[in-house]
Amino acid sequence: MSVLKLATYNINGIRTRLPVLLEWLAEATPDIVCLQELKAVDADFPVAELRAAGYGALWHGQRSWNGVAILARGSVPLESRRGLPGDPDDTQSRYLEAAVHGVLVGCLYLPNGNPQPGPKFDYKLAWFDRLIAHAATLCNAGIPAVLAGDYNVVPTDFDIYNPKSWLKDALLQPEARARYTRLLGQGWTDALRARHPDQPMFTFWDYFRQHWQRDAGLRIDHLLVNPELAPRLLDAGVDRWVRGLEGTSDHAPTWITFTGYAATDDGDDYEMPPAPVITPIAPPKPAKAKSSKRKVR
DNA sequence: ATGTCTTTTTCAAAAAGA
Image 1 (cartoon, chains in turn green, purple):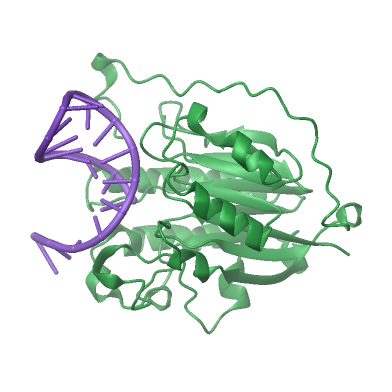
Image 2: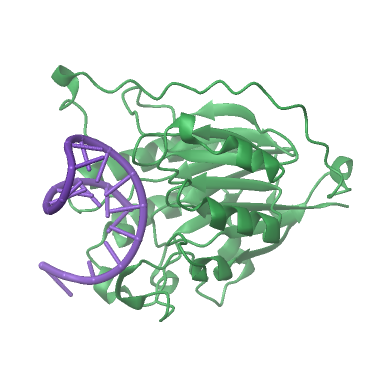
């Protein structure tokens, strides 16, 4: 029986954080990684460095903001979807989906939504509704699936050091929390909470007011597994030590382990396929002046 | 209201997003 490790990590700028990312990959050796907030265009994705570290990658970048990627140790993820269905005018790179090591993996970066109320919060809720609609098909796909990423939602007051100073923040609003609950209602298991019902399990500590030093964190990075995968869960956790590194992201890698298929039972014997010819994918065309105000960004 | 950090435009300083 093999054990697979899948992690989600909001990297907060992949170029700046590359040394931290490589150090964590070498130490934690996850089999599958979902990254968010690349903050880089496709051409700037460090595919060669990751490949040298033993990881194949699929990525969807964007200038300045957003950007998501899926890494696979010793293989290249097979893309099944780029962007959520339901809004052809949405140009933000926030969703990527692929088959990796026998699991369907949805990597997501849900909009932050601040300030609230306002158009950014409206976009957050609309994006969440589109995620819920698509998640229903994944949950009932009949194959193992996971939805992993930065949800920008603190599910309950137990998932934050102290809700008082965050009550008006978009991450705690009832509308966002209700959507998270509705998503779980489809049959997903919140792996971190299921494995650790009695501990907050923070995944994010902002850079302000010494929140890391005081362990004043929030749990906003979530790994949701469908009914096919839930019985195979072994463990879940947060690699907090990464948050303490120099020049690190404000998030920490968050992971699950589960039983894999017998076909991959020699975890250290992966054979890297030949290097693919890298064809940078063109970023979405910027909206023309006449239509730039049309859509809420 | 603020706090910190990163990126962008454009070459210095400030705005914006988180």
